[in-house]
Amino acid sequence: MAQETYDCDVLVVGSGAGGLASAVAAAHRGLKTLVVEKEPVFGGTTARSGGWMWVPGNAPARRAGIEDSAEKAKTYLRHETGERFDEARVDAFLEAGPKAVDFFEQSTSLQFDLGPTFADYHPKAPGGMDAGRSIVARPFDGRELGGEIKRLRPPLAEITFLGMMIGSGKELLHFFNVTRSPVSAFYVAKLFVKFLRDMAFHGRPMRLMNGNALIGRLAKSCFDKGVPIWTRAPVRQLIRNDAGAVTGALVDTAKGTVEVRAAKGVVLAAGGFPQDPVRRKAMFGHAESGYEHASPAPPGNTGDGLRLGEAVGASVETELPNAAAWVPISRPPRKDGTLGTFPHFVDRSKPGVIAVTRSGRRFCNEADSYHDFGQSLTKRIAEEGGEICAFFVCDHRVLRKYGLGHVKPAPVPFGHHLRSGYLFRGDTPEALAREIGADPAQFAETIRKYNEHARTGEDPEFGRGTTSYNRSLGDPEHKPNPCVAPLETGPFYAVKVVMGDLGTFAGLRCNQNAQVLGDGGRPIPGLYAAGNDAASIMGGNYPGGGITLGPAITFGYIAARHMSGANA
Image (cartoon, rainbow, N blue to C red; front, side):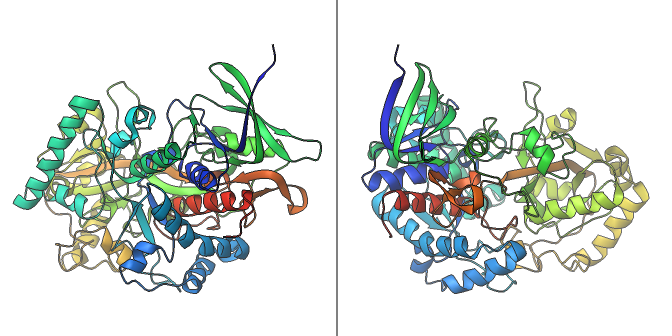
């Protein structure tokens, strides 16, 4: 029996932000497009993420009167990427990024909101900004997807509240203040009633936020433009013609293998390799066996795109100083006995939270970016030896006011976290140190020394709260420093964190047109990459919130533009 075929112009492998952005932009330019996804749901890591996109010169910032320029952003990226600065790709990103945002806002269901206090991660660096470069998808009503909502990957359970998605910024502050402000209490109660209604009628939340909103809006745009998304459809191999150009792929489906013929090109956007222990072992210095690592990425992100590219002559960028975006992860036990993954984004910056290793000593400004935190942790453990882990520590007042990791603030009970072993408790600093295996005397001295200055809002050792990025995630109502408070009210608590990632940086080498490069740095005809399948333009560093998804949607737009033969 002859093998089934499917003819299109563009085949997109993967359904995260990079893949769907490529598909929407290609379809808008009149190209018949197909998206294939190996998992039963679409959305990839993006659907689980915060959904922020770093795009200098974006329209929401312009509307807010924020002044920025491509030259200023280029200065910042040159500083941040150092020796790994790729001028051609950076220039392409800065040129096309604002155009991509305009395109999505004007021609698709994707709409953006500005993070008005969302600073670059190193705002004091040359070209850095206190706000204006990070945008997020506007909340989206999942009912607009109709029956397709069932195929949308749900958000990461650990960063929801009973399954309810919570937006960052002002909305998160309402949740922190729910027991202290009638306005916040009413706001949260209203959201919770809507959430319960959605669960009763739809079995899942319909108020999509963050990365779920980004994927929901992109998927709606795909369906509106006639782009099918095949799920449970892994790509077995790419197809090339006699001249070496990529012309399609063999795709496994429930009905058998389909030969997809793509006249204009194939876009690899399968999410990098965060769940591939073999490549992790080779490229993550802290993961000696490949398993000393935790990732909130979906289980299917196993490096398929990289392997498909390598099989046709592409190569992976292996010289970056960091192969992934590091983040501290704690592991709350689930009811089924497995361990969850909780990425620590916000609690690190709250006043009265510090981090120590088992030496009992602090090792960084905990309110700096999660990527900086991860680099500081691995450096300290390299000096001290032992397991690559740390502990976030707070006192009882802070635990009930802000929570810690997966432990929610009052009035949510927390006893089950103590019983599960996720949360450690000690009546004194020395008692807590013994619980976590830290040096009791040194730990007590660390807290004493920190408290001495924290009572006046200072942190001379590491400078918590001295940048706009630090302060943006602190408590604006806590004076004089939104990130600094003493640990004084026992009992004391701790949560263990290990190294994790928010996506991999080490992807396929590409040029400024999103074309995958082969021998001699020449483009492989018909092959493109977007998202984490492409080597990061950030040089293995993390300059700001959304430096994965901003380039993902931009280079998806660039790939579509190039395949259509357009220059703008």
